Structures are given as C-alpha cells and as structure tokens.
Length: 240
Length: 109
Length: 116
Image 1 (cartoon, chains in turn purple, brown, red):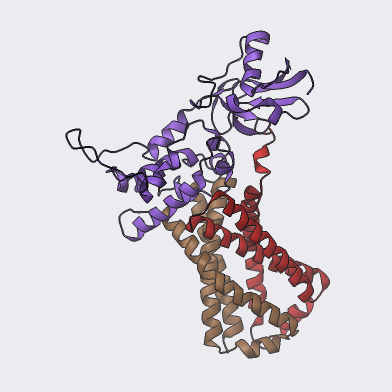
Image 2 (cartoon, chains in turn purple, orange, cyan):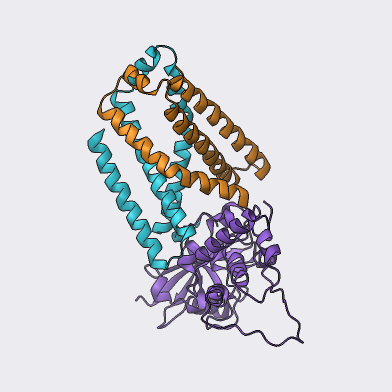
C-alpha cells in the first residue's frame, strides 16, 4: 500500500464540491479514521457524525466510493481504489453540512409505517411468554438487529425516484412488529403500509439486502408485508 | 402503488404466464409454416376459442401495462401521481381498444 | 453530488430489475403497433397479406426477433419477481433464481435465432 491516501470529501451543504486531502495511510485504518484525521489535522471545520466507533450506534454511515457504508467498520484497505477514497454524505437525505445528513425524513417514515409497538396488555398483566423457536418470533428477528444507520435507505433507488416511499428500514421494522404476537395495532399498521408510499412501491432491486451492514434482508421483509397486506385487503380488513 | 394496483398487476402477470407460452407457440408455428394471411385468417375467422383466448390476453396486457406505466411515470417523470394515473389509464384504454379492434379484424367472419 | 458514481448498481440483482422494467417499457411501446398491424386483417385480408410480405424483410424480421426476445426476458423476469415475492427464500437462492432466469433467456434466444 502507498504511504498516502488521496481523499475527496464533500464540502458544503446541498450545493458544494469535493475537496481533496492527503491523509497518511496506516495499518488497520477505517474510513472513519480517515475522516477523523482530516478534521483533527487538516481542517477542523469539517462536519461529520459518529458516536460509538464499533458498529453499534449506526450514526457514521456515508457514501464511500459510490456506495453507502458504515465507515467505522469499513477498512480502507478493502475499499480504496489505487489509494483513492471519495466520501460523501448519505444519498436520498438532505445534507446539513459536509458529511452530515438530516435523518429526520428517515425517522419520520418509521413513524408513518407505524414502527411503534402498540401494547395489548398492561403492566398489571403477567409477562407474556414467547418461545424463541415459534415461526412468528423467528420472523420478528428481521429488524431486531437494525441499527438505523440509513445505509439501505441511501442505496434504495425506489426512494430516490419516489420520495414518498417509506424505504427498506421503516418497512423492515413494520415487518418485525407484524410478527409480534403481543402487538395490538396490526390492522392500522397494515393499512398504513398499503398506500401509495408503502410496501407495494418496492421493485425488488435488492440493494438493501446487498448492502445492509448487519446482513439483514429488508427485501424479504417487504415481500412478507406485500403478502400480508394482500391477504388483509382480500378479507376486507384494509382498504386500498 | 397501493395494494389494489399491486394485486391487479401481479394477478394479470400470473394469468399471462400460460397465455404467453401459448402465444409464443403460435408465433413459432406461424413463422415456421410460413403461413399466408389467408392461412391465418382461415384458422381464426369465426373461432370463439381464439376470440376468448386473445380477448383475455388483451385485457390482461392492457391492465398490466397500464399499471406498470403508471409506476414508471411516477418515478421517472415529473408528473404527479394523479396525473400519471390518468395518463396511464388513457394508455391502457387505447391498448384495450386497439387490441379489441385487432381481435375483431382477425376473428369476425 | 448525484453525479457521483453509484457503484452499488453494479450488481446482478439490480440490473435484473432494470432489465425487467426496460423490457416492459419496450413491449408497451410495441403493443399498439402490433395491434394496428393486426387491425389490417379486415375484409379479404389483402392489406394484411401485403403487410405480412413487407414484414418478411430482414429489418422487420430482426426486430420481430428482438421483440420475442423482449417478451421472453420480461416473462422470465416476471417469474423471478413472483418467486421472490411469494416464496420464502434465502439470500443465496435469489441469486440462483437470477442465474436460472439468465440461462433460460440465453437458451431461448439461441433457440429463437435458429427458428426465425
């Protein structure tokens, strides 16, 4: 490996330009390390977002050489092409400044998809027993490991082409709740995701499934939602 | 796309799978035998079976193409969903009318 | 910024989805012409016969082959989609399904070239 990396970073907000920096190459260097080096040593005005640095919090995702990645767990040696890195803010989200995007639309769509648990019991009821090997419980695992990093949302061309589309993460979350036998808001949830921006807008590009850093499969979850909503529609439980 | 459009889109798709298989067989047969217009028309004129087969085929294709076009217009053009829906429905209607005319021309004695 | 190379699209599953959309669009554009041509078959079919003779030319022949190919590609892509949407599958299986579809399209194309 050459001893120096050529790093292009997006500077500005919605309008701006890529600026190039020279960053020393190190062993076991992550993309987040590179961005941090630039801010600490070359330009302290660089804005970006991170917290845990170990792949748990989901706040450091950025576009790296044309595809979204969790930068803290992405080694430079794996993604740099001839010692070059091009790092930008996540696609499909408004840019606040430099590498930091406004995640608000992303989380609002979680709300739109009814990604909130609706309890069916009160605290006075005994705790409901859910056996880990039941099919519903296994299916509910779809979103349990989601860290809300926005990588799938950023790589979804259906979101890019149809801004009303809820996107893979929100629908994946909805699929988890649809399989949660304790949840009392199923009909409202299915109704919410059966409209114009809901699960049926998905064209199965499968980019979300390819790129999810947690190896989740939102495409399969969305396919499950398509089936579940069609059943509910045919039974007259929800309206188109 | 909402659940109703989705259902129609996938239903017509599934329905057209066997229809396309038969249609491809017809294409191969007609081209292989080098049929003339008179040969073809002799087989189709007055045939209720062919009228039904291609009637269902045309209806399914018009619905399927209309919904598909609506999706593409919503995503790839600047039309709003409502306008895209109207444009796609107009296209589907034209397809259905032209298809019905074609079937009539080939099947009516 | 959007002009940034979107390398995640260089992926067989994404390309399969786009091929499906573009073949569908091409078929939708062709269908009205196809129906208009068949509409010529009124009366004694003389016009239709004339059309068929004209359609024997190499250019039309080639574009007919292309259309049948589009139809087969769209059919197989649609079958793939129905499979992915309606059956539970593992990540590997969706690649296998794509491979099967691509192979089938290739075989169909070779077959078509021999027949037409």
